[in-house]
Image (tube, rainbow, N blue to C red; front, side, top):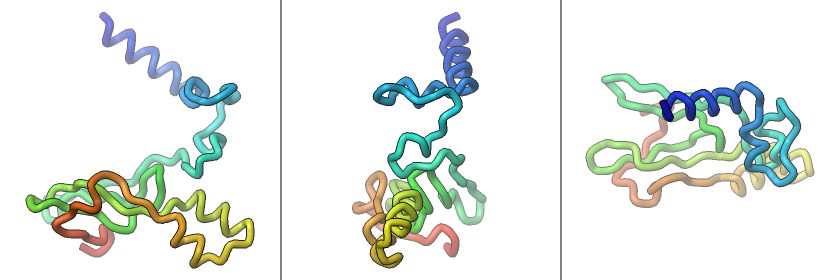
Amino acid sequence: DAINTAMRELFLQIVYGRTQSAFSEDGLPIGAGLEDLGKGLRSQIGTMYGTLAKGPRYLEMAEGYVIAIALDEGGEIIGYKFVNLGKMMDAIKKGVDPKDAYEKNIGTYGRFDQAAKVIDPRKA
């Protein structure tokens, strides 16, 4: 069946570390990680959880450390603000002031600017 074949092929790409190579100029060696792409991303699994009392929370994503979560009128997540730790640390290593490096590496994802409410995922 086509779905099983597709899933098997995705599994093999992940197991053998070839997913990044398929989308990189000149490819990457087998076993290379997301860090080897040089785009400031990290190959860690994102930290997300949810409870009935507080709802879902995004704490860490491949883009970086989540600073704030944007919610719509219904309390649904529509985006988040993050600091790209990979790029921030690279800038600090090059001598950039840590405060400047932090501020220059803040980004948003989704419809963050359209939020009805913004929360700190670690406090709300």
